[in-house]
Image 1: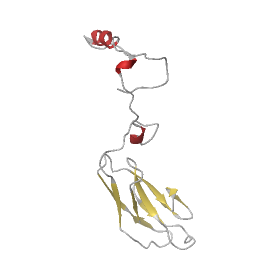
Image 2 (image 1 turned 90 degrees about the horizontal axis):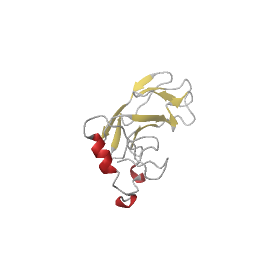
Image 3 (image 1 turned 135 degrees about the horizontal axis):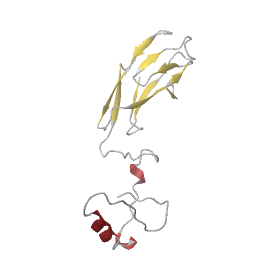
Image 4 (image 1 turned 180 degrees about the vertical axis):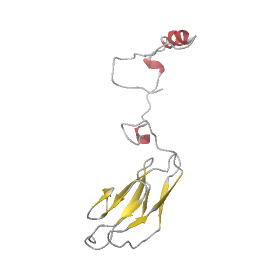
Length: 141
């Protein structure tokens, strides 16, 4: 059951669509708020605007290669592998910038990194892939 705190107190809504559903709603009407126990599961929430929940297993993300030299204005493929997650999707950053930028290089959602036209200050760029299911699980290049 999903409980939403955005309406009148103890109201249940539904629309009968199959035979017998009216009987279910009649039975449901006999329940009182005191029949339920509120459980705070906000620690499982990935995003307040999503129905996704964190998984009970530890999610890990690895990227390969573990280090690379990419000449200016060239592109290199960065591979990611996500374990113990419902999806292999990741959010890529280049020096902390989502998707990168023209100063530190761009990284596409598929993991193609394009080095900038001029090497960034310090000459080093950190590319990270963070799991969309468990954002604290990151792989770094």
